[in-house]
Structures are given as C-alpha cells and as structure tokens.
Length: 403
Image (tube, rainbow, N blue to C red):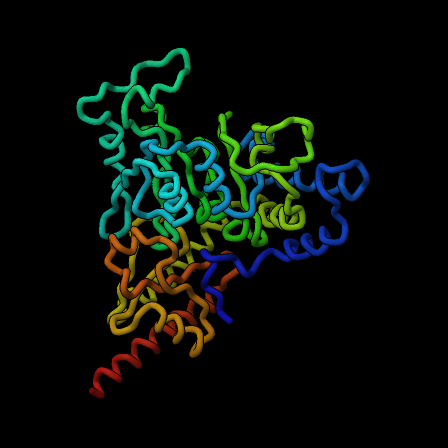
C-alpha cells in the first residue's frame, strides 16, 4: 500500500507511539484518582505530554493544555463554552463541519470570509466585516473590562477559523487576522487540526487553539485538545467526575479541568506524547521541508497531465503537503477507486467535510481526490503515485479515441 491519506490520519507513525500505547494499557491506572504507583505513573506521563505540546506551541504553562478526544470535541466544547445564541460570529467558507455545525446549532448570527478561485481567503475583508453595523455606535473604550459587545448591537464577538485547509492545503496568515481581532476586542478561536506538527504553530496566533492528535502530531486516534492563550470564563458544557473538588456542586471551570471530565484516555495521551516528542526532537522545520519536497515532486509530475485540474494556491511555500485534484470524465470516487484497486494508492475522495468550500469551487457534484503526504512517505512512493496518475490519464485517452 502507498498511503497518501495523512490529512485524514497518519497511518505511519514513530515506532514509540504504538509501543507507548501498549505499555500504558498494561501499566497505567486511572489518572488523578488515587496515589498508588500505576496512578502516579499515569499522572506523570499525562503531564509530560502537556509539556511536550506546550514546548511545540511555545506555551509557558502546560496546564493551559486540556485533553479531549479530537479537534471536533475541542471545537464543540470551546464553542459551546463561549458562544451564546444570537452572538455575531465571523468564520470562513473554508471551514470543516466541526466548526460549522456547532455554530449552526448555537443559532449564531454568522458572517463568512470568502475566498478566491484558488481557495485563498480574502483576509483583507475582515477589518471591514468588523465595522459596527449601520446606525450602531462603535464599541466604546472599556477600561473596566466589561463586555461591551451587546451594547454595540451585532458587532462580532468571535472569529472562528481554520489555520490550514484540509481540502486545498492553503495556509492562512492567521497572525494578520489575530492583530485585527485584538484591535477590535474580538476573541479568535483557531482550528489547527491540519497544521499542528506540520508547519510552525504558536500559541500567540489566537486566543484559543483546538487540535487533534492523530494527524500531524503522529498520535493515536481518540486524542486531541485545547490550548488556551490566557484565562477564559467558559460555560460548563460537559460535566461529571473530574477527580478533584468532588463535593463542589458544579464542575471546576479552570483549565484544564473544565474540559477533562471523566476518565482521561491516558493510553492514547501517552502515545501522543511520543509523537509530539518525535516532532520536537526532529524539528518542525525539518519535517515541513521534507513534506514540501514530496509535495513539489508530486505536483510537478501531475500538473500538466491531460484533463487534470488541481485546486489550491501553489505559489506559496508555506502550505500543507496536500494536493486535491480531479480528472475530466471521472468523479472523485471513481478516480480514488482506480488508484486503490489498480495501484494500491490510498487517497481521500469526496467533500472532505468542507461543504462551503466545495460549493465555492464548484465541485459539489464530483468532489475532489486528495493526496496528502507525511514525513514517513518516500520519494519512491510519490513517483509511483505520479505513474499511477499517468496510467489512468492514458487509459482515459485511449477510451476517448476508441469512441
């Protein structure tokens, strides 16, 4: 098998990841629930994982990292804990359903940042979108620290967006977004599912970062988390046993306890620690450089093939190792099936849970086939992927000639 579906989950991981999970299954107790050795061991390794993630994100306090089961859960918890029904929220047409659906469920007053024909967000429109609605006063200075958003009518309270598109591979310069948000006292929640561990991600890119463990961080499925850049007054949206303050009527609202109700997935978190440590030891720049070489090689091999349409902006060096395409005459499902059955090349076909971007790019009916590369892929695999595409294009040409 040639595995090019790393944006869905990294199948090839550092050996220590699986070894750590197997060890934890036999040696870890229930973290935070007692004082005997297996519990203390779990406690130590969970905290060590927080430290590795904090190191990768440039975070000073590891307790600002809360663990969840995925970025989907992280986004649901953060949106549920901060956004109120009727709040004005800005998001983008490039979002995954893990952002869109929680916002739809909340009943927000939503506005969307559009993109161009290459899927590049129109970042220059954010400032205009944050201007007070016609007839409403600008948000007043608020030295007392009180929330002035409701006094300003429908002025936006939040920007919630993805750092890197799982469809096009485009990476947004989110620091520009964050500068505008801070100037307008808007909280920014950033989905780093695709970028964390793949390109540099730093805590000062947003107020809150939501991540998953099983993609670029090389961790097991069922791991993820929230990184808080400061203190937040989260509403409680998930509650139960936390192992601390059990006689309190309500769940503790401090990080990380606010999001860590119930028994933590210490087995998966220990595996995640080994994946993140591999990144910290190898260096994010080295990982990104190799993946960029593989992407460039594949892009160069397929971009001029007859009938192939590639999506995304390939003029930028800072992008994800992702290439989505279609071949004229085939749906994305048909192409992906040919790649797998004929050549053993694993890809992702369809809508990639990003419906608004597919609507914007006109691919609702056919979808796209996504090739996504990892540090553990090889140049030989990429060349075989190019050859498979060449063969498929040639077979379509022969069928067309035979008509």
